Length: 412
Image (cartoon, rainbow, N blue to C red):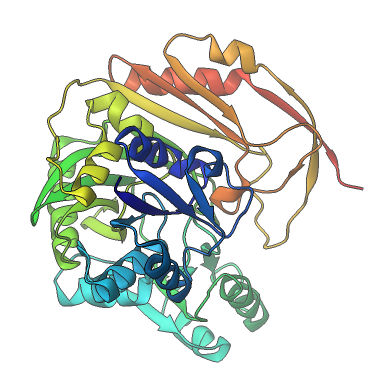
């Protein structure tokens, strides 16, 4: 029986764990969290951080997996690439290129070299450096950690409203706390609708599966609150988005596998936000893509890893949408947290029975804490719906979300 290491055992990794089991593979899951949701579905669990490359390599030498992969997590992409190179295994993205797909400083520099449209950017290596580089922008700019994901630590700074040094230090300290390597990116704020492009590369040829419209929370944060497929942007804008997405995937030299490409359609054309050499999270590739197109990107990703044929043929054309549940007063304009306690949850059965709704999940229960929405980890649940087209799917998902009611009380 062939063996596989799947790096990550969170809820978003479950579809890949199940797919590997269905293919008859002996599945090891690796995660630092001994209570991760996917552990019971695997054959064995190894309590190893997915970003501890040396520990993963040591485990691979001990257990001798035939394949090593991850599905929806950013940082493990580096680990998979490095371990694969060390063991002489199939490597669908080199470690050097994986850095460009997981570290925003490397990413921006590579994209600039390759002529991919990107925002103006600088890397700051200290508080003073950050303050100096932030002054280059006249009013608003985006600050983000160079090496984190899920919108953690990403915030809009507005120096027109508050030009003080103390404000900039507060921004820097907040963002820096999420940066593993200590680098903080200072970037041009791009206005315009944001999408993600789900792609799949087979033997160096990249195919665009679909374009997904994004919804994000109110500024100053950039947390995704919903996604809708297919995109409802004008075709001329979608064509430009596809062009930039293909150029970005080419810049990181993916040989086989999925990419999740985030792009903004600005007044000056499509510009890259970020690219990830993995499947899209937020149930985009595990749920929305199969529902809207019939393409099973989980199965495709596994097939590419184990050397089987990859089936990218669309089998349907309909709409699919996800909406996330979160504490409604989350548009907190400060960098402080106001924790509350969930006191009641109502409407789950009603939402689940509404037309087109395929999934309703809560991540929290009565008695759990809820905090303002500053990263994806702060969301409380989701609903997924399908429809004849994107408009119908979005309306159904919105209605289902509206049916769910949560109440809170202040934390004592």
